[in-house]
Image (cartoon, rainbow, N blue to C red; front, top):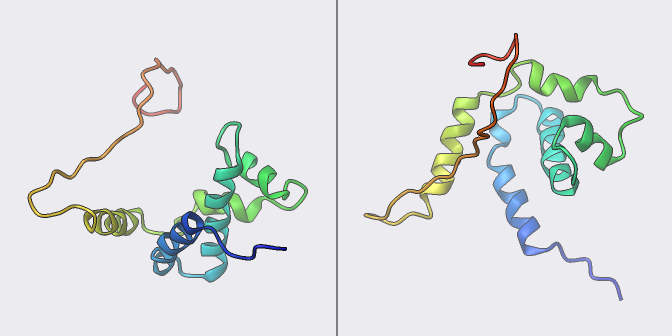
Length: 117
């Protein structure tokens, strides 16, 4: 017997991603972003665009559109941040602390192109 139900966690992820749809001017751009987010779950190596495409089985296809997501202004990061803030504030009651976590690598870097190194 086949179970055709979508797991609850995946439903919640898709619902959260749907709230960002308005940030993208074209559906195909939004669909690429959703595909990359879902491929991130399947990537066990470095989390790069290339590894995401590999996880989706798209390494033989043209990569241009995927890289344009990041090389051109396809969405407004400030609006995305505001959307994320609204989503997370829903889970914080009045008088509760709003706690965030950040990821920082404490490894010295050197580069001629990377600012701050």
